[in-house]
Amino acid sequence: MRFKVRKPETFSESLFAGAWLFAVLTSFILLFAGQANARDKPVKLVVLGDSLVAGYGLDPGQAFPEKLEAALRAKGYQVDVVNAGVSGDTSAGGLERLDWSVPEDSEAAIVELGANDALRGIDPQTTHKNLDAIIGRLKARGITVLLAGMLAPPNMGPDYEAAFDPIYGDLAKAHDVALYPFFLDGVAAQKSLNQADGMHPNPAGVDVIVARFLPAAEKLVQQAGKNAGEK
Image 1 (cartoon, rainbow, N blue to C red):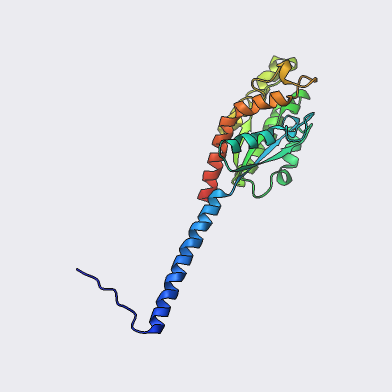
Image 2: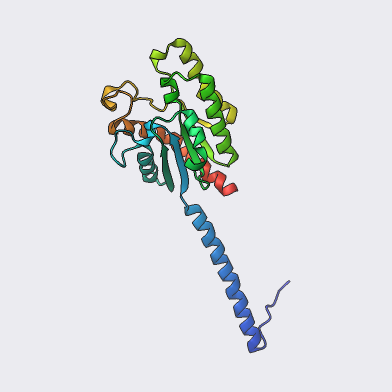
């Protein structure tokens, strides 16, 4: 069977046909442009934490969030990493400021809290409760979460360690979120990688943390981008 395309018989018909074709092509161009812009939009990743990410004792641009953004962008990821670290913050402090520290348009979050809880000997059940609330509220907002774990300092004793250390793994499993077991992996107790206080990483220490953390951060950004595209 053959189909014949009828030629416009009048000038007005030709004009109408041309206008219709132009409108259709314009619609397709705008549609694909909008999709491209949506794909090119950077993922907004917020690092909610304490002095370990805030940049305590470091020069501007040397903190973990800034260096993580640079590392991710160097690997081709479109991402904006926001430093929401506050020195001295506990899990309770992070929970109290959660709503204004993590903007509404955030798509991913790294939760790095609990070190100061352990240093102050705060009841691990309280830390668990606070982190549980933080993760729950972030997930309720559709934010993809990566939990950065912490270990109790040895001077707190074995009983405290036994109660504190499992918090992060238990919460990651309960909320089905990604877990980076120990934020200071490879840096803790390494004199050459820490500042004079022996607790906060120096620039070289931050570089080690970023390098080790990067694969987990890549998966976080990929998942956040996927989740955003499904909304």
